[in-house]
Length: 488
Figure 1 (tube, rainbow, N blue to C red):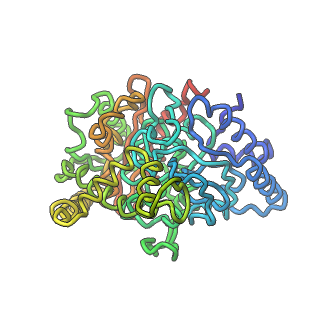
Figure 2 (cartoon, rainbow, N blue to C red):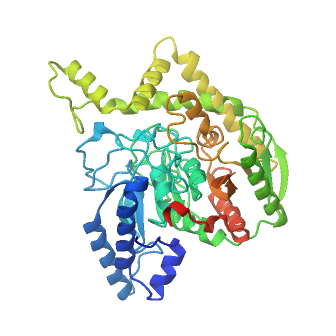
């Protein structure tokens, strides 16, 4: 089997020392992706020939001392909802069969401009709707730590690929925890930046007021490097923030002394949370306290309404965004329809999976006449209250610490027939999307031999602070160096 790849920092050092070449590294990544595909189904498609050409060009730039960035020559994967010019973009859905993107998402364009080598696409829940990567149109992704369990979702393919050592970094998207929860389940780092920090242009829309492109890696330092590349204002995205991007790497000084970390009482509860997960997170709190950080209890009182608020808003926006998939312009079109209405109906019935249909129907219902005020408007009002909770909390602390998920990775099929139980997997992550604030998940130990994630939440544009604390924690622990035995 092809050897697992090291971290971005390790690969960069090997490239700089001449111990390897970009061509060799990319070939290794492609070989490992192919070999692990049957076991884990982390990838949906590879672009071997083009990736090899781009790696050779990176080697030539290195010889000419014309490197573009620290990402130059480094292989990575994209979640299959990020448009990549000349490549399929399926969102793991049959409705996009045959679609080839005519343009690059801004995040992808910036990765390519920095010299990053995209080797392919990762599996996901269809249209990013799910928390387990079981809703893909063909096959689910499996967790490298235990193939009988889920990797989380909806960016489970990206998380599993990084955990399995296929690539050092990958891109995903986070609408309600879809980067942070799979990062927790797979024992890797996952960061969702502030809404508007990274352009959404070219990210296939699920819920436009919640979606954000995010990063997977093994270390906070690697996450900082990739986030640096993709962040910044984009005139093609009207929600993009026109704010300067700080030097994230410069913030990683290993020092947390004097910081105050808020521990929300609503997240540290016994009911509904795995006690082993809570113990690992409390151990992490003690480690940060030993490093000089202070802690205090804070309250986010509207947390009990977060999941309901999130799903009302997300489903409403999904029903609107997915109306464009009608079989007329691109993707799948049903055959044998006798009129336009029949073609629409049959195309969408054949093309969308069960979970996507469920969310479209519920979203359409809450937006319908007579129900808009009772559901959608009220959810937006609750969202304002949730955002206010965070603003109040940050007046007494610098950042907030919680478990990323209430449990470790659950078994494949365990929640497929119970959508409500699946939705509750997001209970600790959805609030950050509703408030538009950044969040990061960092490995903090194991419960029953499965990874546990520690979540750090910061104020808007607080990515530097989150990365600094995550990096300081990783300097004092070795959880992020553990590798899955199933993918060794």
